[in-house]
Amino acid sequence: MEEVVDQSLREMRDTFASGRTRSVKWRKTQLEAIIEMVKDNEDKMCDVLFQDLGKHSTEAFRDELGFVMRSATTALNCLDKWVVPKKSNLPLLFYPSTGKVISEPYGTVLVLSSWNFPISLSLDPLIGAISAGNTVLLKASELSPNASAFLAKTIPSYLDSKAIKVIEGGPDVATILLKHQWDKIFFTGSPRIGKIIMAAAAEHLTPVTLELGGKCPTIVDHHSVSKDMKSVVKRISGGKWGSCSGQACISVDYVLVEKSFASSLIEMLKPMIRSFFGENPKESGCLSRIVNKKHFQRLARLLNDPGVQASIVYGGSMDEEKLYIEPTILLDPPLDSEIMNEEIFGPILPIITLRDIQESIGFIKSKPKPLAIYAFTKDENLKTRILSETSSGSVTFNDVMIQYMCDALPFGGVGESGIGRYHGKYSFECFSHEKAIMEGSLAMDLEARYPPWNSFKLTFLRLAFREAYFKLVLFMLGLKK
Ligand SMILES: NC(=O)c1ccc[n+]([C@@H]2O[C@H](COP(=O)([O-])OP(=O)(O)OC[C@H]3O[C@@H](n4cnc5c(N)ncnc54)[C@H](O)[C@@H]3O)[C@@H](O)[C@H]2O)c1
Image 1: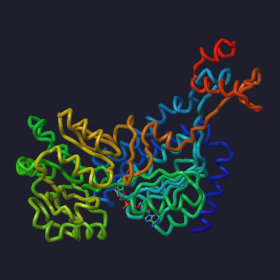
Image 2: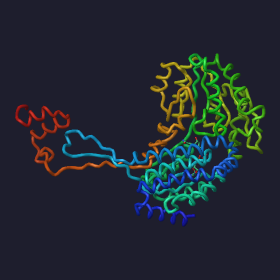
Image 3: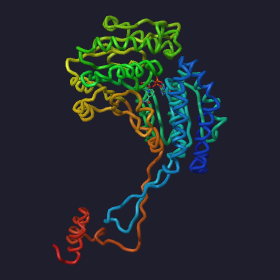
Image 4: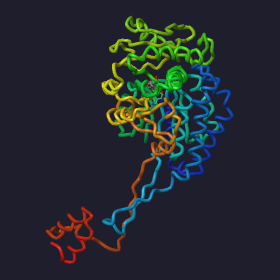
């Protein structure tokens, strides 16, 4: 493997050095090829997603194939605009110099992706890296082996294989990759492995984007949304069970609601689950499977905690052979239980009751900064408090997960939920170095810049730094001390 990595890196570096990937034409050709690849292989992609995760093809299209095609199309349509150098309006102080910012590709970048959306979380960063003109090595997750094998086999037949490489493997391969020097590392995964990635990147002072996870709270302020409760319940159910069975970084992790409303909420969630997945969700074909036995056993352990077991108000059945966990609702599991302290990443929804919904702010602040906060409320005061008193990658009012799809907004975490952001033009920026360009003029010079120093120059500098141009003119004319 060491040799394969060495050889791949050499080839990618040579390709980058040749300047080929910098041309907008090359970038567009690759983006078109990604769209072509997804279109040509829709059935195969749906098959591998079903094999790895039991994902329904419609869900697969919404979260992966369709998402990737949209992302590549946006990049294709906007690239000409994104690559234009941005003119900077310099203060008069710097006259007659001019300034601009140009986006240059980092060079050769490493993308490490996760298993829960193995197609989109691999191809979407690739779209950003290509748009910015980089060469890229992608390693998808070993935990979605069919998707990983598909990408390794198919990408080289559509994209420039001297510039874009795919390597399969797990932590051992990632460890080899991380020993090398990259110009940028883009990682999607857990905060625990994120720390390993950042430590390895530090060796070479390589910039990183870390797209991590965490627990995303959902506030339900029933007072202000009582008339829309059906939509609220539908959105929460979609955000917990409708996308990879809750195995998504931006899934609803738990709900915060006032005690007086909790039982009504639960009574509305139950029929919603049945309307999504029928009387027997296991056979519905619409609920993704837990990715593997290890993750199944992790979720079973969380659920088998006696305090958590006692809190089950709906569901709770499990079938290890079929990697199936029934959509499950918990009411007030112990706050010190593991399920309330680690990212659930599965189809289990704890409902935590509060005396007053305003207490949700303190609850969220007592935990690590989430990737997303969701709040169903029309109370402007509560909205303002959420925005100003909490910190998270994003806040979505009256909806869940949709912020991910909206590529006009940056997507990324803060604190333990990640570093950096991407999507849409933010992906282009994520994989570009913004280089400052200043064009000076040799036509004139400011003596105050240079020694020998004296009090005249000091006063001049004081006024110039304050951009007090009128006073500066008076001072130079001897009309002001
Ligand atoms: N922010 C996002 O966009 C986003 C999206 C999906 C998942 N996630 C997060 O990812 C996590 C689940 O995904 P996961 O289980 O694939 O994460 P993970 O951290 O276990 O693995 C992610 C990647 O790291 C590699 N890896 C594993 N061990 C490694 C090691 N010791 N050294 C180097 N690389 C190693 C894996 O091969 C994989 O490619 C959750 O925390 C979830 O919230 C975040």
